[in-house]
Length: 66
Image 1 (cartoon, rainbow, N blue to C red):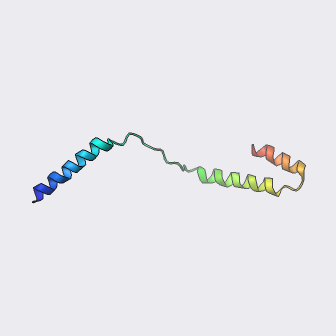
Image 2 (image 1 turned 90 degrees about the vertical axis):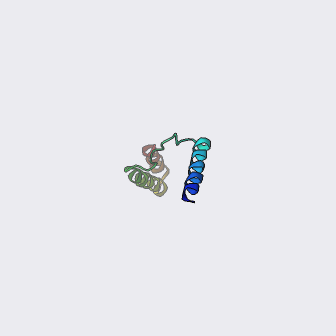
Image 3 (image 1 turned 180 degrees about the vertical axis):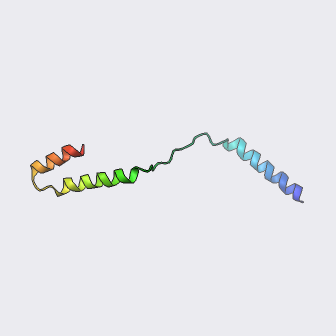
């Protein structure tokens, strides 16, 4: 009985390997160690743009943002 299950399991595994193939792509992690710091920095810059009082300040802060 156990041999029968092992045979079925092996047949399923080999069929899946044939159909799906091996994993070909290795994806990098999308968040690095520096990412949260960059996000916080961009958020602070956007806040500075939104809080600028005059048009001149707004243009100046936007120039720094870019």
